Image (cartoon, rainbow, N blue to C red; front, side, top):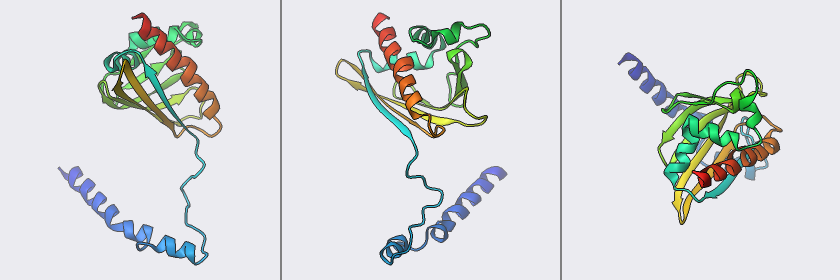
Length: 188
């Protein structure tokens, strides 16, 4: 109870401080019109991100299961050119928890993270990291699934990864996820 009261008080104080942090309404527009530089400290206008939309010929529940069931995802991995990661000596087994907050280990342990949001057959959001990244660096991936004629449409967004990783990740999402997922879903 006490922690809830403190959390509400902290949130109330943070909301009350917003006008002080942001300035009066229209102040940034007036400053820009007067020739003052815009205040953008802490806001990146050049951050890399990945947005992809992919259609699958399977229903959304089957696609969601392939992304969240360890045995199914292990089979998907073995259909990709990353299969050597799961068969290498010392590779970690594919593991995917089934509730928000649960960890996952993919591609022999090269990809790890936590499930942040799991809305069955509709959405999966993960804190996601690659083994070669600096310790503690995580990005956020979001898989949104919607029924489409003949299957499921996946809208995918990946943000917050280390600078310079975009091209490699884009290649990996296509070659290690979308293509083997399509083969897996077609075969099962």
